[in-house]
Image 1 (cartoon, helix red, strand yellow):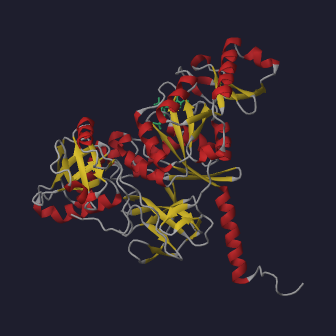
Image 2 (cartoon, helix red, strand yellow):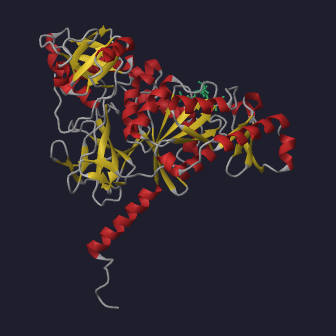
Image 3 (cartoon, rainbow, N blue to C red):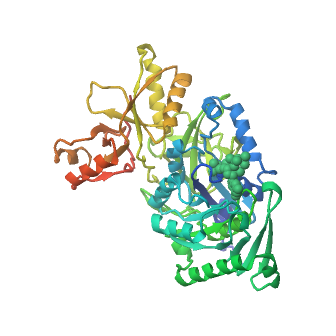
Amino acid sequence: MGSSGTSTTGPAGDALAQAQAQATAVARRRNFAIISHPDAGKTTLTEKLLLYGGAIQQAGAVRARGHQRRVTSDWMELEKQRGISITSTVLQFDYGAHTINLLDTPGHQDFSEDTYRTLAAADNAVMLEDAAKGLEPQTRKLFEVCRLRHIPLFTFVNKMDRPGRGPLELVDEIEQELGLLCWPVNWPIGSGDQFRGVIDRRRRQAILFQRGERGRQARELEMDLKDPRLRQLVEADLLQQALEELELLDGAGADLTLEAIHHGQLTPVFFGSAMTNFGVHPFLKTFLKLALPPMARTSSAGQIDPLRSQFSGFIFKLQANMDPRHRDRVAFLRVCSGTFQRDMVAHHARSGKAIRLSRPQKLFGQDRSVVDRAYPGDVIGLNNPGVFAIGDTLYQGQKVEYEGIPCFSPEIFSWLHNPNPSAFKGFRKGVNALREEGAVQVLYDTDPSKRDPILAAVGQLQLEVVQHRLEHDYGASTRLEPLRFTTARWVTGGWPALEAPGRLFNCKTVRDSWNRPVLLFKNSWNLQQLQGDHPELALAAVAPVVSGMEPITL
Ligand code: G4P
């Protein structure tokens, strides 16, 4: 053999080994967020998934974790008072040949803005429905965010052990109301007291549900549809109905293709019961086969492949005081390409500064451990000394800047007054920091004599958190003065577009933090009226993403 062959030692060998490790890691990874309405069973399903991954040893641990968090939190005092969960973190666990990143989202709908942003970092979403309720308001809202990004969506219809709506009706509701094709992967036999299990549609197998003691784990008994025991174990009419419905689906339904799933056009649907652990394991296994691995993402430098050798990623969430003992601020980074390594120096696209990324953390609920390496699809927590803002890109090599994260339409608006002039410094610092952190959106009146900011939020509790933190972290006790608006729309053409129509009625014009015009309406009727009067005025419910612009500060 001559000496001209490729060397596998030295720097070239290291690079090759790193590229191989990266390719293997990307192929293993699946990342998703669960979207649901409160009480649909997100905590329960999360817990069952973690059990399969061996990430927790016993049921109840997620809730226990929640209780512990309530003890160790500080500004989360509010969580304790209200018994809610505000923070969202990432749960990483291995299952079989996969590494799964479950992006956890706040339990309370008032913090859905946080969930919207988390969805920007998710490659897949699982829509969890309560079988008795079907689509609920929060699920619909979150679905719209998934649709904006064409995220593959998997549906889990939960609580089948309880009386619920008919499966055909539930599937039809998704198709009609969300305009999404459904492909049931399994189909229920009966429901509630008469829930007997599901039929795995592709394998033509029945998986029978054998109820455990008082909501305990159910047993899954699997058998062929032709197995004579099936007729002995399941009432003939229930089985007959399920088989007939399946036939109907086979005749009329869409085809299951990865392409349709990955473009967010078709949702695989699963029926089960998270509490009794029925259908969770088959769901996880099928999800891992069908879900999208980390893919190329759009940036200023074109599509960035996860296998690009240089590291890049973006910040999708900031959180202050997760651990009050350290008064720290954490920036959550989604790795998009390359290999993240502890202590690496990366460029911060917005400021152009080089930053050493020291003390990166993996967060599992409230537990943290230092990470040495992370790969595309992973999320890590970075110490944020006030440098990072939501949507910021970090990169090595040629400059890349990922598409920012849009602002979503707020629904609650309130003046924020600072009655104590001597506390103005803290007030200003706090308002700017909380806006940057994404705790709330900040708008300003177009009348320069009205300098107090207008807080804009998706939920009332967001405003309470802001007030609480201004007082406890920045020493400014504030007063809210609610404004009676419920809807905001960004004027797509900016200030010049507002000149043409002249005076607008039944709405208020304000500026957002990037000096863009926003119209506030008291109700959707006023909005429709304005759209009818001025069809040429393009309005957007989601703010265009900002990049390369510095916000207005108080
Ligand atoms: P969330 O995070 O989406 O808000 O829902 P969570 O998991 O907390 O579940 C809400 C309630 O629904 C819980 O009851 C939970 O036990 C119940 N639940 C979840 N999955 C199922 C299921 O498959 N079947 C049935 N029958 N119930 C289910 P809870 O009474 O509020 O709390 P707990 O006393 O059970 O802890």
